[in-house]
Image 1 (cartoon, rainbow, N blue to C red):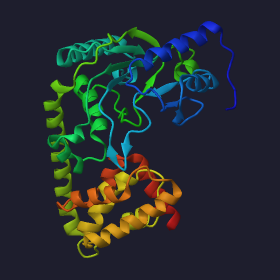
Image 2 (tube, rainbow, N blue to C red):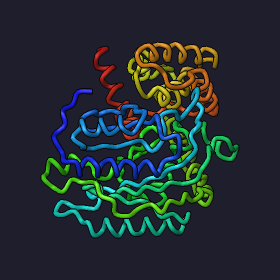
Image 3 (cartoon, rainbow, N blue to C red):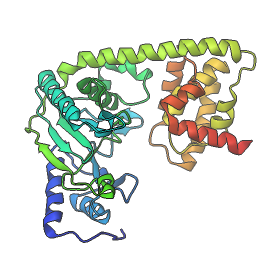
Image 4 (cartoon, helix red, strand yellow):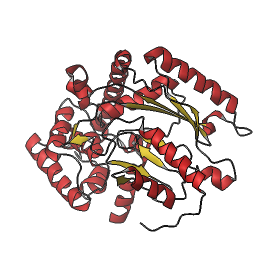
Length: 366
């Protein structure tokens, strides 16, 4: 690891080490391996001990240092094996501002409402960090793997994420009444938390106080998620209804515009003709399964073969981190209910990164 660190005094190093110890205390064992991210890295790197994390932090001049609240190994052959153990809320000051000012007083009132709601809902007393541009709220909880229960497993055919990740996102929306950072959609693979004592690079650039500070410390108690499960199930039902409505509208569009051609050009040229290094599960679920089954009207066996061949090409580009057979079967099972693929317009709203990749691939072909 190349060392490009700026010199900091011993007190600064100890403060960061204490901050890492403080955050690690929020996590379930085993603590390692798990992934960290820094400004210099720009991606998540797997670490196997605390000292390795501190070296990465130091090499990044302690800027934008984060560690994942969930361990590296979260699934096995596409099956979620990670119980819910950590919830977070991200409040960004920019979301409580207008063109003239950033209203920190409003932000603090929202924070106090969130802390009250967490207390009332599950009896939680979470950690609160000031990040330089807002607040982070970290609440360890006692949970379990929701897919193990039929009441929740039935929803897996409608969502593209494991239910632990879905619950993390639900909890943030539930506790904040949708006031959290709109760009923040944590999953078990991206539930990145900041380290007290490290620096926020945006504040460093602006010459502001950049240190991540502890405002309130977690009380050490992991409240049960049980009181939230009824609301979570209702939230999942709304997600399912939303998907069904979108598919019903799209079905009408397809019936009018695609029935004769029986093909959708952007899917053929922008997806099937190209391997992808990311978004593979999403593509199987939202695009290829319903497209091959319900637009092209292929038999299930043929649709399976097309997707398996496509995933094999993807695997050569970037190794798959899931069982392709299970994921394809899940996709076909969901699509067999008549759902249609997402439109380009909706893809732009729902997954802008994939939308841009598809446009790029189509452009190169023409």
